[in-house]
Length: 183
Image 1 (tube, rainbow, N blue to C red):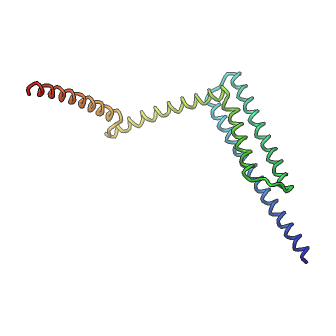
Image 2 (cartoon, rainbow, N blue to C red):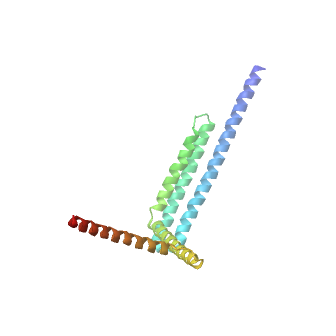
Image 3 (cartoon, rainbow, N blue to C red):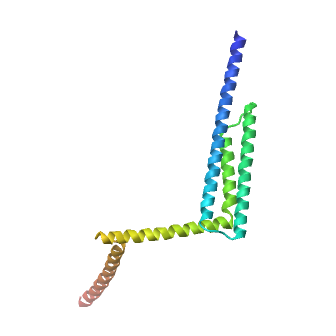
């Protein structure tokens, strides 16, 4: 009976280990897919802002290809380490995280170092600055129409106040000199 209980314990332990490994692998694959999707989406968004020259476009696709290879290598490494864990090797969960973090850094470096990404990013920043300016203008117009004080009006008052303080200081200095001469 003791042998059967020991066998049951080993089987239960094995099942728990396999369940944890399956869960970890599923979570890793899901994170990999999400990271790839976010990566491709951000790259596509940056590229969408402008149609780069053929050379830049080619460079961008080549970088994406290298990044994709990095993700596939990471998936292979994850599979190998999961198999090692299933065979009884101690594989800390942090190693799985480190594989994905290292791969994300490599993949992003591949794409972000291209002139196509730089051009796309520049276009996005330029568009955002234009949008910010337009929003500011609309905001100021709305405030003025509502009879509220606008930033321009506050800036004008501040400028006048600074000028008045400068003049007051100048007058005070002149008065001090006059008082010194009278004494």
